[in-house]
Length: 290
Ligand SMILES: Nc1nc(=O)c2c([nH]1)NC[C@@H]1CN(c3ccc(C(=O)N[C@@H](CCC(=O)O)C(=O)O)cc3)C=[N+]21
Image (cartoon, rainbow, N blue to C red; front, side):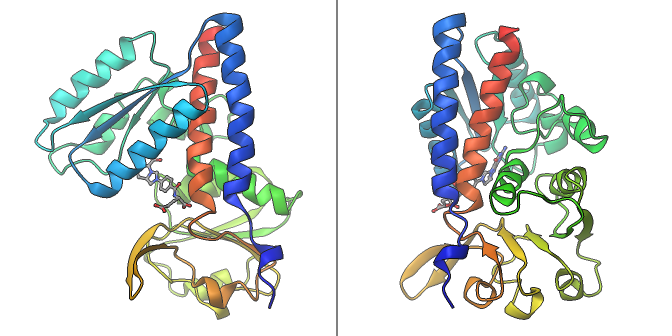
């Protein structure tokens, strides 16, 4: 079956969004003298994190914004990291702060995320921003990956109200905020998790399936109702005879023939995550512009 027409092109969508953000960023700089600035903090030497951090810094600069990066050694204590965050919170030239996850074991992730000023929390992970989203308020920061998924969904389904959405995975970073956004768009939402008895029975009923489980190839062809829209958030490294590749949580070749539309990995949700980070950084800087 022809897959090209149903492929949701996250690269093209993100490119367009980034060019709009760049115009707004340049305008903010020209009119208000504010150069939107993102501080990226990385602790330790996880090679995958290093690649993501480099990509975020490059995207920030391409969008006409400034980035400052802080790379701390793997042995950094929680107190030292909290000190850096306090400095960045107080720095008026810094509008957004991102602490790359995962953090080393000696550091309590939630303590660090909750130390970031909510007004600079461009990841949307602070408990205040999570709470604002949970109660349906629109004045907080929304996590970048779920925000990007919603944009891709709207591009193929202009009206989401009344549809049944199933979110596979309930992390604080993707699954939970994704479910809130879908519900607020009028979907009836089911969230599956490790204790769900029959995940496939849930996804088979769905008009929209969003998969953020961190399990390569989890979703098979017979898990999907014909005509459903499938969003694959998974980013997994797989060793193949051709070398290392990035694969999603969806068995793409099996699922694509049934789906009305589907995101590829790579080239789907990932590029949107970065574009939405830039959007949140711009918003943080605009907040200061009054
Ligand atoms: N505080 C924090 N915020 C994050 O947003 C965050 C984080 N920590 N830790 C790690 C994850 C991972 N993440 C990705 C973003 C973009 C791509 C991306 O653009 N992927 C491309 C290329 C993938 C490749 O080829 O390497 C794609 O899917 O097409 C992937 C992964 C953000 N994360």
